[in-house]
Image (cartoon, rainbow, N blue to C red; front, side, top):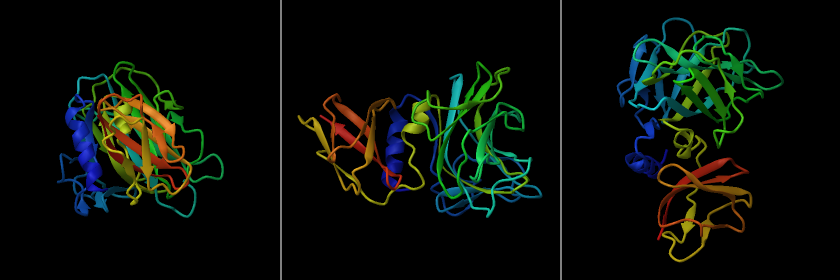
Length: 309
């Protein structure tokens, strides 16, 4: 991930009133994840260790002892959200069997695992689906449509400590978007987000990038940039915007592109298609904003800082 994006992440985190709890883009040297940042193994330390490769991490299901890792956070909020980019390597055949094994979850200070996410078999001609359970090892709800190997999806998971319930979204832009939910129960305070390796029927390899843990849906998703982030350097003009209601986007390769703009509290203030390479920003007040541009034909995006004066 480009350093400019990382700097934007740090800038937002420093002034967003604690809404972002973990901001992890895995910009570490290739090798074991544990030993970087505040990651620690809570099970199987050092055995088939979770690996960093090209600024992403890989989880591999399989036989024998395997390392599970957690990253801690502190928050008094009763709802926690985690978002991450998910890619499943092509197995040559669709996910099969009945033993799917969860690979991501929230965790308390002990060994209570909540909001468990797993990979399950497709219902049609696709390769897999994702499932969610609040606390059990088997998915209580499964995403309604098939998903594809070697395609990156943005997964968002919520654990509500009041309702004692987990929810899951795929490529969502708003909390009201389609989601699936696990059962309700007794709420437990969570203090870690974890990744897990085990022995599943298909023993798939899972790639993770751009993990954000936050206190609300918007903060967990506002700054996410897909693993397919474009190397193209879009330009915003003018920037700063002074007495000008039109923002021009330079560098677009398609007429089908969208833009979302968020203020420094993570609130989306503009969500629009880009027409003739311009966007009306007259509604924005003086301040600093984060702009995300998505090219529809390539599904590539980039994040920029915008100043309104």
